[in-house]
Every structure is written in structure tokens, then in C-alpha cells.
Length: 102
Image 1: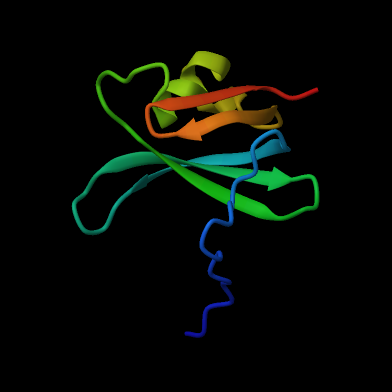
Image 2: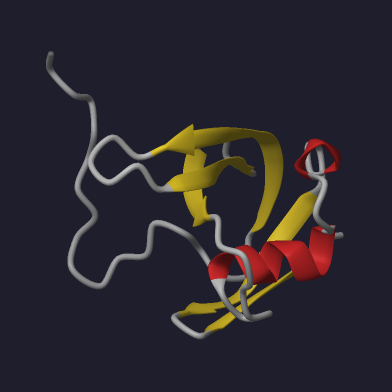
């Protein structure tokens, strides 16, 4: 199968801070190699491009982890996340913050 994927250039962000994204869907998945369980969040940028972010499930997470940032803003019912508009304020490891977009 030929993949239609462009590699980001060094220093180029795939996820853009401050840009509004709409949550199109969420889906549970299990990684094939190690069997880790997660939630895949499908985001749509203002220009229509799609982006998927995996959130790995754990018993407890910090508020500034990937999953913790989503839980702190949107709650623990992923069915209610669909259609919400969010912005990424910070997406560095241990400093992940998202907010509702206007």
C-alpha cells in the first residue's frame, strides 16, 4: 500500500498552538504491539485538515498530561467531546494545556 503522508520538516509543528480545532470523533483502540488501550481524538483544523491525537489510558493522570488536559477541560465522557472546539495553549511534555475555542 502506498501511503499519502507528508513528513513534517524539522521544527515544523503538525499541531498548531492557538489554532481552533473541532473534535470530529473519538474512538477507543488497543495498540497492536503491546496491547496498550487508548482513545484516539480526531480533530479538524479550520482549513479542513484532520489530525489524530492518541490519549493513553491509565488509572490516574496528571492535569497537564495529554489525557489529563482533555479530562480537565471536557470531562470523562468522550461521547460529549464531539463537536467541541478547542485550542492548544501549550503542548510540551508535562505542560499540556488546552482551552475552549471561541
